[in-house]
Length: 204
Image (tube, rainbow, N blue to C red; front, side, top):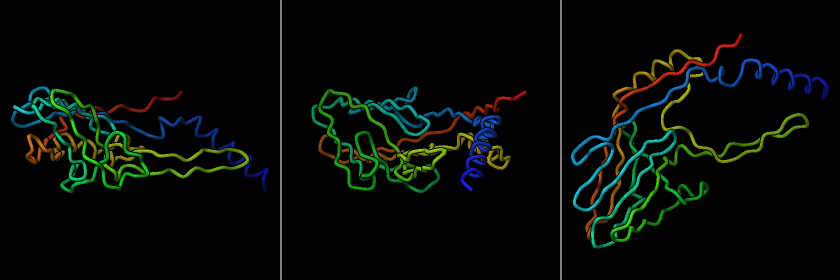
C-alpha cells in the first residue's frame, strides 16, 4: 500500500511538473486603478490638512499620509472599511499580527509635519493554510492572503468573463481620522480602469 501511494504521489507531481503550475492557473490578470473625486491628482489626495498618496497592490492598498497640520492626526482603524462590492469589510494594517486581525486596533497617531506609510488588507482575506505531511511529500502550513481581485481564472471561461466585466468597477476605502481634534470620515473612491490578461505559457 505504501509503495502504491509513493508511486501515486510521484506520478502526480510528475504530471503537475509537465503541465506546470502556470498552465493550471490559466489566464492571469493585472489591474490598473485610479483614485477619483475632489482634491485628487495622480492618485494623490490633498486638502489643507493632509496629503495622501495611494498605490493599489495585488493584496493590499498602500498609502502614505503627510500631516500638514500643527497637531497630531489619528487614523481610526476600527472604523476603517474597504468596500469592494457594496458591503464594508474590516481591515488590518501594518504591524497587526495575522492571528489578532479580528481584535480591536489602536489608532495610529501621526505627529505634525510628518509622514506615515502604511497599508490596509481586508481581514476576510487573511487565512491560515493547513500544512500536510507524509513520508513522500510535506508542505508546512502558514498565513496567507487572498488577492483583492481575481488574478487567475484556472481555465474557467465563466471566471474570465466575470473578471473582464470588472473594468470600470468602482469601490471605496472609508478611513475615519481625527484632524485638529475633529473626527472626519474620509472616503476615497477608486475605479478599475484597465485589466490586462496574460495567457499561460504554451508547452511543446
